[in-house]
Length: 172
Image 1 (cartoon, rainbow, N blue to C red):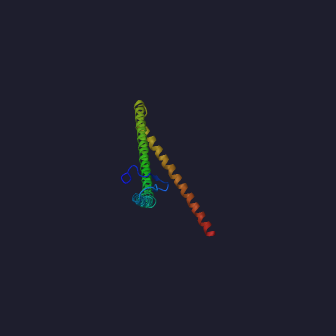
Image 2 (image 1 turned 135 degrees about the horizontal axis):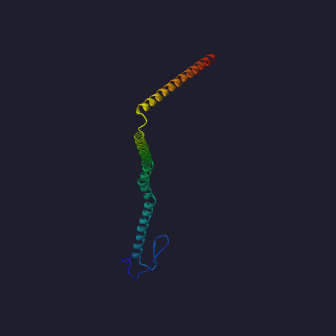
Image 3 (image 1 turned 90 degrees about the vertical axis):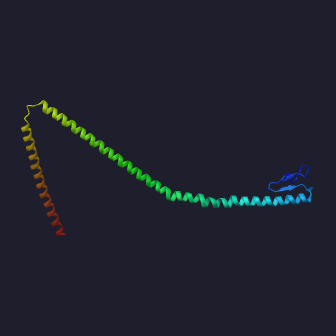
């Protein structure tokens, strides 16, 4: 504007609607240039507003919203699934660790008891080894006899229950 209107020309005023207005004392040529510039500024202003309100919204919908939808529909479920898989793996590792820790502890206790038993056997040589073997075998025989008796009793009970079931079902 300074190139078109040197100092000394009528003052330019900027109104609230965004148009440049000139004093009524300006020359027609200058006034025509100002009006032309107003039209161009108005066109640029309208294009900018259109771009701002329409084009940017369309670009946002096309570009950013599609990414957000893709994230919500594809990435989020995949992340949840990976989280479940990770939790499952961690639980498996934890269970294996606990199992191995229990196994190691049990084996350590077995070795300790074996060691203590061996030391006691060496400290008390008066106990006859053959006598301990026979006592051990007698205990095993007694346990087998009790087991066979329990098995026979259970079979008799099962047969009686089966008989009762057949009688009640035939009565119906």
